[in-house]
Length: 132
Image 1: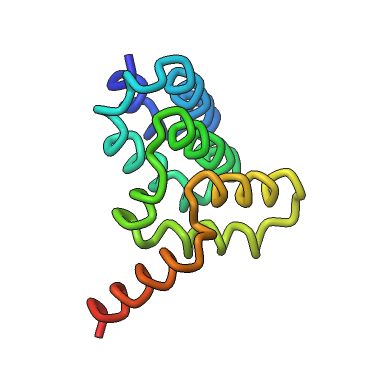
Image 2: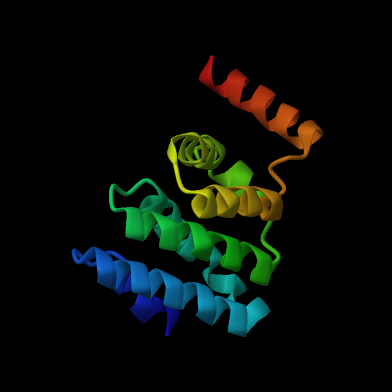
């Protein structure tokens, strides 16, 4: 079911794509650890939608990201596997005017474990070595 829904997550209609992402998040909440084999595929689609211009898609992706990570226990690793994730979330946090979306970003950062200063320092230093 997840594979079929992921195909529709790229729908041109923003409302359809947003509702599909919400459905994916709920489905992963229900399936829990059974969704672990699909986590990398799910995260690719969700992170692509986080940078989408459509507010509905972005908000649905943000909520789905929190649901996927908390339900599967896939934390910390997304921050390492997707180094663009923290800057993307912090940009949403800075640019967003509504309190609910800002609260959701902080919640997702907490779920991911992005606020661990030691891990962040280690990841940041590794990223700097790669880029330089």
